[in-house]
Each structure stands twice: as structure tokens, then as C-alpha cells.
Image (tube, rainbow, N blue to C red; front, top):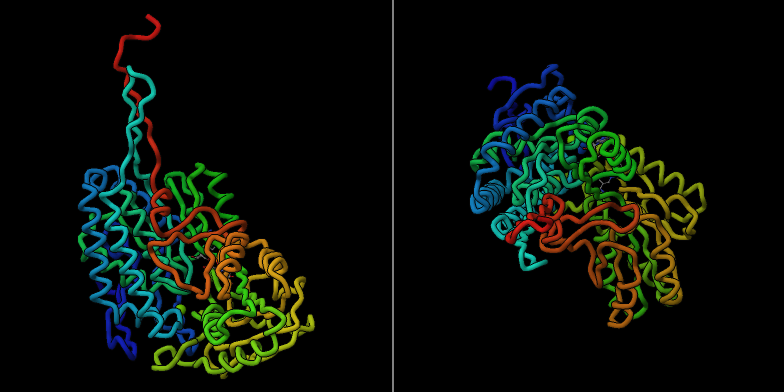
Length: 498
Ligand code: NAI
Ligand code: MG
């Protein structure tokens, strides 16, 4: 296997063999054109290694492998065995938790301690959908006495899955688990910024015993490999998580090719609303976690913070104190909460938003600068005096930057909360049950948290209203993304028309 692995080392995982090839048909192969690209460590900007780059030709090969598996052995596999394979993979994630978390921290820059939670959540997701595999049922429907009708759920087929870099392995698990439970086969393209975890997971997929071609893992760029998947004539479905701009282009590619089914989990500009009667310390803790967790690189980040006017000044002071305690630094250090942003490009995008906020006249309460001079670290940044028309209040920043503003009435909180084209998540902090329920019901968001934030769970559907996406992931809802319905109608009586 020379040339298709490299020895890497992390402070927590020690030395390990990092696969670098494309994983197609349970084999490690080079790309047809022999191309490779560099993978960077965002904590120190050095090159970690090179991996094979999938081009359109490799996409064709991977899709053909997934098609062959789908029409052949995988179609004949029992639901029970599909479930067993997912459970086995879940166990392998748990067994390799330290290694997988180390690889995530190395590749993405996220704090190792946080990455461990990601991997536990991967295991939970894989096991949960393993449980669903043999519980997918149709029904029998009576129409007339001389007809027997059954409605059957069938796998949609070959699925392309395109994932981002903010939760590389968690997005990997969210995507493959329901697809496999439903009997689909998969070609998954990881993000070019973070290909390493998916490649390590591919070895676990093989170890778990998945037949060749059922899950294919490729590294590559969006404009080439990603676009080729989205417009492929033999891909039945594409599932995507990432930017709204790319989501639109995927929907267009599906429309312009074979009308493959599309689910999209896109951006957000989620409101985090704090009422005067909230437990203020508790609220601050969740507001802080809501925006600064994962360095602000969360689609559901609580980036617009609205605080009721009577507690606003006190809240801002206490929130500043709290945010300044977030430890920013080496992802592998014990106390680190916030590591570097994932790439130079993301770092530049965020710094440009900070500049735009300053130029528009918003007040920097804390932060607003790069931290250190090596690695893509940014200080936790809080803007106040932010008006609704400002770019930093409208656009997804995807970094440790939030805008804080005040409201006076419940009606106003609902209005400003909904004043966005996005609708992924929202939160309300209050001790009043009526306020909590009325505001939750009025907010146009796929998830509303009350007195908490970012508490995702594999049993709970997740996805967006408005321009935050199409479809839901997680929970029972996600199964419908990977199933299609067949109606079978059997005539029992004599011919109707003689
Ligand atoms: P992106 O949406 O361009 O990339 C996400 C994935 O899509 C990657 O795997 C990429 O290779 C692929 N991709 C890119 N262009 C494609 C195309 N034309 N066809 C098919 N696949 C394609 O996001 P990017 O550039 O990494 O980040 C830009 C912004 O997107 C961020 O600043 C953030 O606002 C948002 N974002 C949202 C995420 C979420 O969780 N909803 C995750 C990552 C980014
Ligand atoms: Mg990287």
C-alpha cells in the first residue's frame, strides 16, 4: 500500500497510519489522474500531508461501484444485517474514539476535548440508525373489496453526500447512517479542508464488514468532484451540508441533470433571545456557548443576541466577562475551548466581517483582532450598537463574532428574531412558560431551544426553515430522505370492463 498512507503523530493519539488514497469498493486507490492536494494544520499553518484528489473520472468510478453494490449484494442484504453493520461501526468509533478525536483536532483545529464529544455523537447516530434498519415498514390500505393494496418503502438508490469541514466526522455519520439504514449505497465527498477523519473512518467501515461499494469515501474539491456528483446522471439523491450559495448550485445541478432528490442543510443567522426574567448567569453561559462553541463555525450558531432592555447593560458587562474567560489556543491543550478557524480563507472572511462591523459604526465590546501571529486564531468578538441593516447582523459570519442588540416587548423580540432570510435555529431564555411557548411557536426556525443552546441529539430532527435548507436530518424524519414510496395495487375480482 505504499504511497497511500503516511505516518502522522498527534499529542493525544500518538503515531498512527493516515490513509491518503480514495476509498472505492473497499480498496485504497489513487485518483485516475494521480492528483494530490495538501492538507493544512490550521493551528500552525503547516502542511500535515497530501491526499489523493478525486476528479470527475474518479467520481464516475465511485458512482459505478455504489451502483453495482446497490443493484447486487446490498439489495439482497437483510435489514437486520444492515443494522448490525451500523452497530458494529458505532462500536468501532467508540473503540477508536481517542484516535478519531485526535485526527479531527489536527485537521480541523477544534479542541480535542470537544472533538471527543463529536465522536461520541457519531457513535450515537450510527447506533440509532442501526436500530432503525429493521423497523422501516409500509402499510396495507383498503380501497375497494376487490383490490389488495400495499404501500412499500424502498431505498432511493445511489446517494451522493457532500459534507463540510466544521464537524467533519459528525457530518459523515449524520449522512451515511440513515442512508445505510434505508438500504442505499453512498459516495461521500469530504470537505477539501478536512479529509483526514473520513479516510480513517473508511478503514473502520471495511473492518466493520460492509460489502465493497456500499460506502465509498473520496477527498476532493467542490467545483470538480462535488459538482460532478451533483450533476451525475446515475446518482439518485444528493444530500448536502454547507453554504447557501453552494446549496443553490447543487439544486440547479440536480434540476439540470436527472432530477435527483435533494436535501440541503445550509447556513443560519440564529437569534438568541434573552428576556429580563431569565436566570441571567445561566443565560450567559448558553449565549456564550451558543456563539463561541466550535469557534463560531456552526450552522446553528446563535450569532444575533437580543436582550430585553431592562437587563441589557448588566447582561453585556457579564457576557463580556464570561467570553473573556474562553481559553483560545492549542487545540490539544487541556483547557482549550476555542482553537483556530479552519483555513486562511475562513480566517480572512471573518476578519473582513469584523472590519465591516467596525466601519459600519458598531461598537467592539471585546475582541476584534487576530490572536497571535501563527495559526488562524481570532479573539472572541462581541459587537454592540448593531442595527438591523448592518452586514454583521444579516450575513452568516461563521466565526467567533456576535452582534448584540436590545428589544423591549415580546412582539418586538419575535419580529427581530424572524428578521432574516435564514431559519435554522433560535433560542429563548425566560422563566415564564407562556413566554417560552409563545415565542418558540412564533419563531420561524427548524429548532428552538429554551434555556439552552446547541443541544443537538440524534433522536431529534434538525434542519432549516426558509433559506436554511430543504429536509430534515436526524430522528425518524431523516429516513424519508433515503426512501421512496411504491404503491402496489392487486386486483382480486374479475376484469372490471369485461
Ligand atoms: P461550501 O458550501 O462551498 O462547501 C461545503 C462542501 O461543499 C465542501 O465539501 C465543498 O467541497 C462542497 N462544494 C463546494 N462547491 C461545490 C459545488 N459547486 N458543487 C458541489 N459541492 C461543492 O462552503 P465553504 O466555502 O467551505 O464555506 C463558506 C461558508 O459556508 C462559510 O463561511 C459558512 O458561512 C458556510 N458553511 C456552512 C456550513 C453549515 O454547516 N451549514 C458548513 C460550512 C460552511
Ligand atoms: Mg486542515
